[in-house]
Length: 178
Image 1: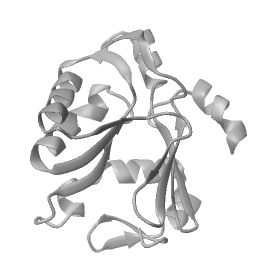
Image 2 (image 1 turned 135 degrees about the vertical axis):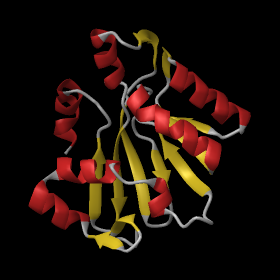
Image 3 (image 1 turned 90 degrees about the vertical axis):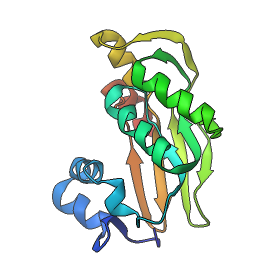
Image 4 (image 1 turned 60 degrees about the vertical axis):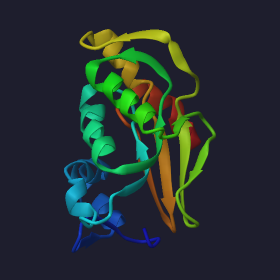
């Protein structure tokens, strides 16, 4: 992020503001989510400074298991939740085995990615460990979505809000901040 551009894959450099103006922020999120790490990093670059797990539903954590297996990950940012599933438990086991430092997301945290890039945490506002989450139950699933990390990535004049799978209720709670 040289302050202005981002790349989904090498050779495909875009200005995110142009994509948002033309297609919407949802399109930018979709486009970013369809990228593949192998296309975005040179084959010889096996280090990732920070992996962010917005919340531990299988559709968010399953791919990260392979990332942690195949790359040297320096840190992991995640919500602190009491939740168990095969994918999430395997992810946490690998992170612990590789002694990767875990950062539990909290409102007000600021994570500096480099001198010009910062990630500000807006949610979760509390530890969600007291809640009992179970994979497969819609009501619990919705609650786990509300433990999603909501963060703003800022580099140069560009700012992008990432909301994980936070519900409209959480978005309405945060809206006055913007």
